Length: 274
Image (cartoon, rainbow, N blue to C red):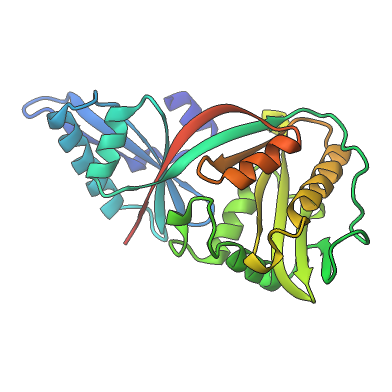
């Protein structure tokens, strides 16, 4: 872990621990890794389920670390496996909230049959274009609208500024503005689909896709997904992955119809900083 930290430029001054009284032995530890969009990712030791003493101690270490978090950090997040019950209890004791269980999906490189055109075939009033990489204002409006009545991690709504969310989306893999799509209804921004290639992982990722309520239920989502997949696979012929809240049944069915299959589930936790 220490060697990987050096390779990836992780600042180990954000490594916190509790020390055995009268010795140098570390009892519990956590590492804060700053990320894009004013986020901090948490890595920590793993108390056993129900081990109240260790859970209480580690939650105190976490709280102390977050009170001295790197300047500018706005939100802490951790992604845990379903079987990591002790760490989940620790996060909850430290004031984290569960943002949902995430299903991780993967789609092979199978071409899209009859891919839609950005210029035609959309429901009345709907137009689709590439988002302007020099101006995020319309994309920000589209994202804000897509969070209304969302079934995808609604606990996250309002916790971060849109500029921070967009910074996080751009930092996933390698940002390619040719794969960021904006949806309009009668000229108004109502949705988006954002894809990024991830060369190191040898896949591309659907970083975000969402529509505001006025654009839902009109067949826009399936066409938008097919368009984005076709363009992504054409530019980067590698599998495509995404994550979806398991409570979001309509989105899961949409992805399944497009050829995605689930390969893992994990639980997301977040806590505002400051």
